[in-house]
Image 1 (cartoon, one colour):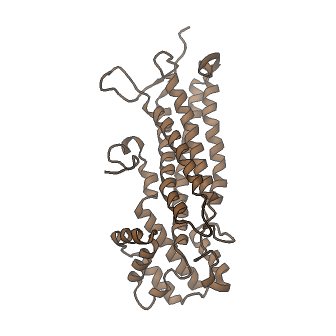
Image 2 (tube, helix red, strand yellow; image 1 turned 180 degrees about the vertical axis):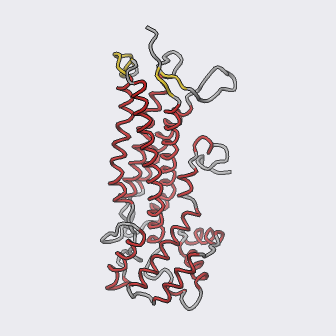
Image 3 (cartoon, one colour; image 1 turned 45 degrees about the horizontal axis):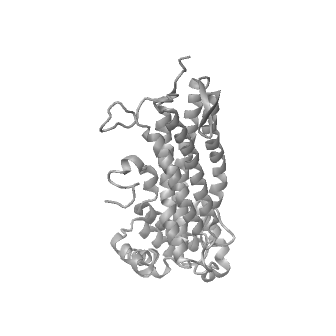
Length: 354
């Protein structure tokens, strides 16, 4: 049983997204944090911060380390973050005499935030691919049915007849704009977070810059002049983008649900939800889910903006809030895009009988 509808054993059939969720799972989180620690050891070894034999030993040991998740759970309950317990697990795996070089110069936030960057890279690849599919679906729909006459509505009242292409373009073009915005989002989100205890990398001394560049190169992330431990505008911008994506899909879903009403009948769905009491109905479930997910992400967005408020150099409260909200917003966007694809594959515009 789960409190989240996205991985609930029943509701996930409606709202879940296994592909995006896998990127945000505990297993993916641990793997990404270990990738950071292995790359850190290699970079510090190459730049002369730690002995090369220690770097080699750490890299090899963490490549096959068996991390005890129960110990991580106990540790996060005690420390508020998972990294102290993870470092203990890593040191146990590396053993003597090199365990003291594990995690050298880094802090918990470096590991967690960079691990998130690594996982978000795959999430954004998935979302980008799905957006391209949805745009293609809408282009195909316009080619097939763009000339069909539909009734435009302003303020829920019939206005004037317009071609279906007018409505379809109002669904497609926002998705195209969001797709174009993605590269700027990636520039701000797919970055290395590396600053040590208070963002100064004080333990690395004059080698800090070299290690940062080396580490960023190994992980395929953008190096920053300084860590953004308390500067969360990139994460908030990503959340805003996710809400824009689901919001635009929600507008499409709302239009389709209205047009599919029996009394309107401007579109027909070849598949939909059945009713336990009224077997004649084809409920516009996909369209409704798009509206739901749009409202869900719009609601969570305000929380992500609350997480911008970090006191001083790091906030446990704001940071924890971000962990609670951002993954759900990403899964909601993934589900919305997947749902939109299926919905568009089932829709056809109905020619007027007149």
